[in-house]
Image 1 (tube, rainbow, N blue to C red):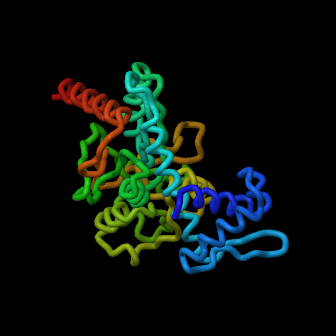
Image 2 (cartoon, helix red, strand yellow):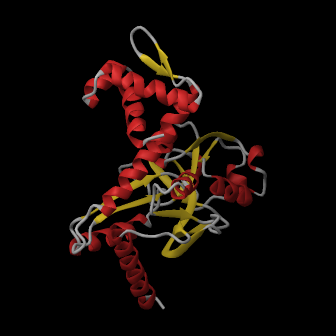
Image 3 (cartoon, one colour):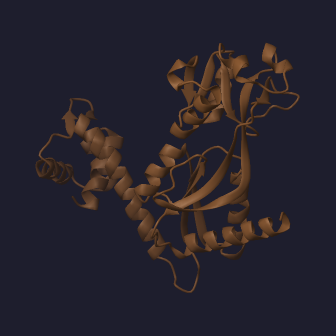
Length: 299
């Protein structure tokens, strides 16, 4: 498979039409049709369902589209970091992370990097630990920020100077809002909304002392903002980490920590034997320096 042909396939999927994709790519329609026919022959499968009005994808086409986007993104990322003047530190940094206040540390470091190297660009991706490690493994991310516990055997990592506190997001009108902290007995019969992250679910099960399938879970979330909307509709109680959703005086919501405490450390991880671009190396060096300064002040 050629990268050029994968770009053609992505364009057809986006435009839902070979003629529209041909116009977009500045190709003739017969040329584009021939390229896609050759791709289907090469793969030994049908990728497109050619309808009268628009084109749709077969199951194999949907699979290829997902992989083609990752491949093209990785190629573009690699080329962007090579096509830079050698005398200037530039390039692109790709960082993924879950919702956590520790992203302030990353933001501060990026600001310092951009101040001295304004030609660097950064790209952030939000997702849970499962999403982040998958993109790290495929080379789409340089770094990932993950909440403990996380499997770090395949990665190098640095512990970030931050701790996330687990608790429950609920309506201020909830009967549990009168409590200063919540114990397992307070929640065991309440409708729960929990993180879809594998490790986070295991931590919650451990805190309750029950297998996750026996808990009264009514829903799961990937990013907490969406879960907070469910809480506002009084669908359930969201188990989450603190300081991510507005719980100020004007908010309908409040946060109560768990007892016994459930806290999570945070790490920034990257693949072992990773070869960094100059931009990614500068970011990591600056982050290490910031963490060293923080630790020296607090020891």
